[in-house]
Amino acid sequence: MRHISTTPPGRRTQPAGLTAARAPATAPCPSADKWALLQALTDGRDAFGLTDRNLAVLSALLSFHPARDLRDGPPTVFPSNASLSSRLHGMPESTLRRHLSALVAAGMIRRQDSPNGKRYATRDGNGRIDHVFGFDLRPLLQRASEIVRAADQARDRARHMRRLRQTISLLMRDAAMLPDGVAPCSARLADLQRLMRRKLDLDALTDLESRLRRLLADMARQAEPAPEMSANDSQNERHHHNTDSHILESEKGREQDELPPLAAILKAAPEIETYAAAPLRSWRDLVGVAEFIRPMLGITAETWAFARRSMGEGRAVVVLSCILQRFASIRNPGAYLRRLAQSEDFRVGPMVMALLRNRDAVAASS
Image (tube, rainbow, N blue to C red; front, side, top):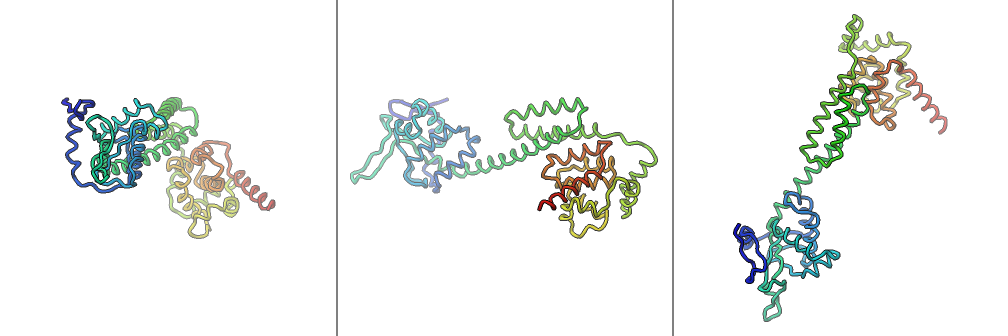
């Protein structure tokens, strides 16, 4: 690579490409708030290969510029290394020189060297500054739009990564709440949990989310009981897809020792009525509202279908109403519903009675 000396004695050299970059410096530049520009550069620093220490040095340089706005002029500052080190809380001069060189290499500042390599300003016969030897800040001003674009992209990427991490945390929590006994899936989950301890980029987080969703689907399939091929079960499956308004009344007849009256359910879990467009007068109305709020509770369509198959539609709707009523105390509604659906000893009657007793106790205490 060819190098061109920036001072007559050849005190410091720089790549010819950086010297060639001086050509556009004569073009007119808009003004920009120097601190807003520094904040944008801080957000988008990865795009320019800058570190937080590089930016700290740039901040100190900008503090020597008297105006808040950078304007074409040229905006040149000429603090000594000792002055810069003082504003950087005693940063060693060797470290300071390294960070200044990084800012020059990144194209954020440009050196304007004097014949003796010192930084100073000369004045004309009227006492006005006519030439400054120091650090030219115009490259920062010229790249303002590029810096702002990089900052916007970095913020969008950070928001996307934040949402991905939240989604991944919820998926891992759902996977951890699924029943034991699926050893291969448990090993895969442990591997994915170890990955989360690392600092992952956007592509790695996206891949991790996809792997978690596939794992959850595999775990759900292994956890679901195989359907029995009896005539009664076939009849039940037909009932699930029937739109007849009396379906739940017939189911209630089959489970009359377990399924409480609609009025008792609404008294025990009144929260579900707040989501209804009209008063709930039938089981069909209750089913419609349950279908509406099920996604709000974080219960997947697969978990809901499994609960309806295992419990029966009526009991599943009652359980969902009770879960909504106790939402603040249930960490994972989807996993909780699946565990209840898998339990052979679970009965909805005691759950409803417990809510009624709690409601009466609260009313009595008030």
